[in-house]
Length: 144
Image (tube, rainbow, N blue to C red; front, top):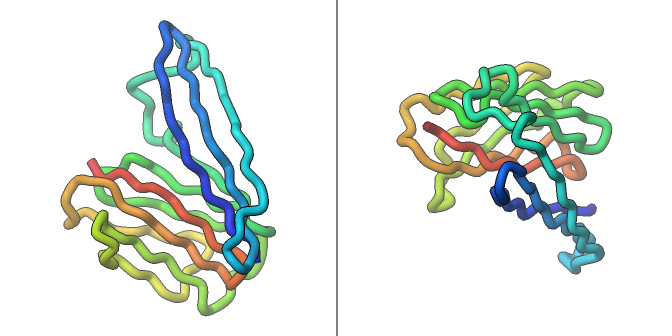
């Protein structure tokens, strides 16, 4: 089982946005196998402060599954779409607060899921999507 972690930083330099990510992969024993630095440059004309909801979609390819999450940041309802095959019955979504406590858990997820965090306070949350033992995705969610 390989785990992949990303550390991301956004830096404004003049009129250009620099996005830097460090990608780590680990083997089943927890030993780091690779470290990769990824830098993306976005010109100011491509960066907009007031994006509409459809521009706030984020995708991740996990195994054979394409996971799309939107909007992030959210005001309370987060849509999680999973495409790429039949989802096992034991697949789930867990949302954790900054102290590591579970604030929302959805078992038996489907291809289209709505996560309601409208009663939660504003802040940063961590969401784990477990499709099976080998296909796990981790997301940083911002609640406005």
